[in-house]
Image (cartoon, rainbow over all chains, first blue to last red; front, side, top):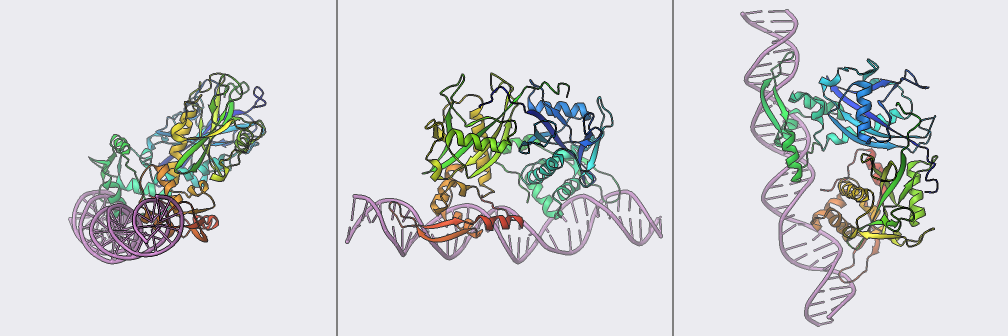
Length: 230
Length: 230
DNA sequence: TTAAATTTGTGTCGATATGACACAAAGAAA
DNA sequence: TTTCTTTGTGTCATATCGACACAAATTTAA
């Protein structure tokens, strides 16, 4: 209040983008192009433009740095308590967490090809700033959200066999799930439409493919429905 | 990224402070002291100092503007998608939500006495900026948190009769609760210590006073305990 | 071509949690 | 001393959860 016109804090956005494939959850990192940390891996992100909504800034950075458009994007947390989180300036980071489905894992780069890569959770290196902390926070968030919102579907193909969904839950929550009870519970919501297609990869009996009915979910939510998986 | 050194966005913090008394949930508002909105009620808050952690900025503003130190403070959301939310400058607001217990409702003002007041939820006026929206978001947050974290106790006196807790849930969630089932459920957690005191206000049988056992809760949480009220 | 291995699909039953419901006890107010 | 108000408490029916096993469909290996 006392220094109204002399505040000098920069506002950045950063994104933790998750993708899931073959029982592995991965995070998107990009290679820093300038500055002290040049060539180090960091979370995609950057400074917000003066006339740009925060959310658009994230979307722009993701597209510029990795050529990607995400399926799901939500604000995570604003990191700004450590005033030296960026040693050069006071920078606060409005962080987002995002989900993409497997078809988007091929990084059809924009300006800056192949300086973006997917890192499985257990192979994420030491990162500059507080980016490891941001990733940690977003993992907690995705784990808790999985339990009461149907966000898992954003990480799967539009049509998927039940086992994909089940493995996704097991992988992210890091625990065993009873296959029969899980299926029973999910189906009881009536939010999956059976398709007439079957999956056909590898050994074993082929599986029916299902589709998540988003519009039915939206309708139910308005009536107080809670998607809850324990 | 292209305009690294010329960004001109201001960073503010705002707080929605809740207090509960006599079946009423209230929010703290302060009178704007400068500018176009002088003398209008707004959420407490202000610009962050260059060398100040966000959380400290909120605490400072709350103390300066209302002489209050809160029991519970948590980051709510960062509002920055509407680039004209403040018509003078681009300002983003890192918003917090806070809880105080009834003893703190007496506003022993600091610098700026009596320009702070408690407004029951249904008496909150039209506010400048997007402050009504921020309040709305924080109400949703407190409602959902009540269901899976023991934050209700922060709004009560240290020692409280069971009926206070029950009324608090009913008021904030805006629904009827079965007294017996509610008590059974809460007591089953083993997180309330009975004191040997009794409440003695008005008519009716005096009630035992209880105390929330925070350290036991902290211990249980580490073991995976979830405080869940439906 | 046959046997083995792999994955999908499905129901029951006991244990646990939830939700509905009523009356006596303690004290204040009339 | 009677009435009113609020606290304190148990049962039972229903719904949900969690454990558990075997047959069907297909690929892979022998």
